[in-house]
Image (cartoon, rainbow, N blue to C red; front, top):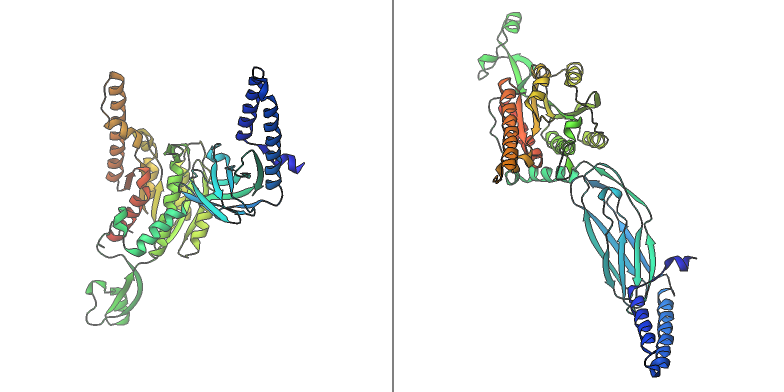
Length: 442
């Protein structure tokens, strides 16, 4: 039974069989070749048996699909296929890998040659655009010799599961650039620090050289000598990434949903903020609060953030900013930097949420991050050649103008904004963080 399941006839077999059938037809008019044709048939069967004995005489080949421990969402992830040829002769292998259903690819095939008693490998890349579990099926290998009449099938790695996490490759890229001081090559700006952000440390006796503006007059009166407040540069400031998971964030650009752009950015940004000595936390919400991680400064806390971002589920419901304001009021009691990833496609949708945004920004530094519609931008830049195209272009330009109007309205109310294309989200978010830190707004 195992022999039958692994035995396949090649295209070359049917070509030879067709030629023999045509020769038999010709022998109807040329009877003298009839006997020669039967000799060809016997020879053909003999060669067929010979190749079968060659391919099924030993264990054949060993193959393995090597997968990474986890995939990075929206990035190219490498998969390695390795083979070991136990035959003493050269073989051809047609490799058909059963990719996860999320990739929607059913025509994967790779043909390689391996010399006798040798090893070989190749690699290919996959780019997932959704978080979750990806299940690889069989690694099917069809082996044939130089004769090429039959094939023997081998099956390896019958089922393998890989989880797709938020883009840790992107996170490592910006981490490396930050260490290597080459941030400007990727658009990140070095911003000169303006002023000081200080926190109280202790009250001490005045000595010559202390800033007289820090004199504590109550302590001076109580002690009968000049006492001053001593401050130190404020460190470990709380910073939260707040991700809107409602239906407005399900819009796809280049195959990736806006919410996944936000998740990738939040992970890369949290890593940078931790290395800068700040405390990071995160919140996701739609019509109700999903996950809440309080701000902490432990380096290992990044693993908690990664696992939480992996498990974020998007919904088709409208977001409730009142729920977000209530959470911020109850749970985030210290002045913090809040990076809110959301999207507004029309100015009326912004007006509905403005009261909540203003209430949040009274106590915290709020940065509203929303997205340019890059497809509408491309449409507005193309040359219109007909009345319908002019109409479409006018609508696209109106939407672009509304986005700029939203930025102005938020800024007029003291709310920081970042309007960015999805591809530049991480760079622009880190730039805004560096700007706020440099200006000492926290």
